[in-house]
Image 1: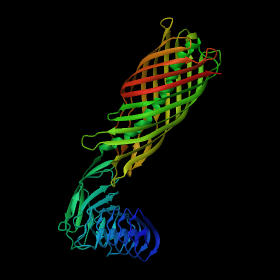
Image 2: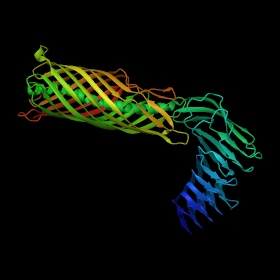
Image 3: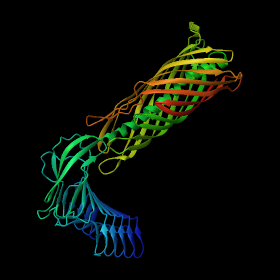
Image 4: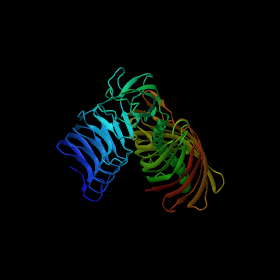
Length: 558
């Protein structure tokens, strides 16, 4: 059986899947007589195959880029990544997964094979993904990658792979070992990787060993390999936390930054409300609807850095309760999303870049009490509470597991936030007024756990505690137009993204530090007859957070 066949042309991009049954002949991904076979594949997970298992075949042409993947079933004959009777065979691969594959003792696994004696057979790869069992022989592989996700038991002398081949077993190949979630391993633990027949000498047939330093997603290991005639052994020299794992926590800090931006949007409504009240001549007491949105790009210095382009929006209603008092209560819904990239550099490891998306959905309550009637003219107190769910995905092709799969995770966490503040308003001249503010903002993103490359990572609860202060100056250019400019400063007291794996604390990025702000904008009273206000503004950041954002706020009384 063949996934595709051509007598004289190209056989490319074909695939075959075998999951059961009996195949008496050959099973081939793609085949041709006089053309070339490229990028074909065959996957076997069950059944019995009595003939050859081949990724690609050509009678006289070249065979390249084909693959064979076997995870189950019974194989009674040859396995060939690529096979040509008279052409070159290059760049093919064979992957064996797990321990449920049955091979006959005379089964030979070829990366490539050509009957043309002068033809090139090279650059073929064997991947042994948690494979264990008995195989007749491995031939014509330039690279062998052995991935072991679980450390063999201490004192277990049984080798991972047993070969019944002759002296050509792994001749001239380079062997690299990759590991999975071994966790913390005591130095000195040894185990056997491969054992061949007594007549085989791995030293004599040119087997070379590579990668004594191995890094997975969470841990890294130093292994000492040795060849003892027909045995390939490994000894653990050391195990330690992979410093590159910090990139995982770097991505995790984004939901905290995004929901903190949402908190700023809610808190700024208090300052804006003071300006709107001044334009209307008093605190608005009738029911209002309000809408606000902000978006921009920010660069966060976290020890490395995170670049976040985000957007936040909220909509709600508010009213005085009862109407005769200066206490305003409101309720709102909020949402937002952002795209981000992370950048981590290390002294003793390659840099790691990551990227992803984050979004949140929630709602909250707010209150503002104008204390002028209590003898504190121009003073108002404000509070808010928010809660919802924040989602985030992260991926990086630079941080990989033992078989080269990039690290990624998708998380959904609850978030909570609250703020308390005070504003103070004064008329400086007939046309210029000033509103000062001081706030405390708290934001929390819940604890989550993820399995990344087989390693369990626990991300601790994220907390932000920020102190903000500043002033905004308004100029009454016209009864319906008030430009403004402001300056502020923020100090983040916490904002650290902590995570742990196998009892090891991962290096933690942090938002802790100070940020200065400058803002400018204009508030319009859309009509003189009705209290409808529009605020357009822009704000710049410098310090721990750098960037720029724009915002729009709209209030309208019924």
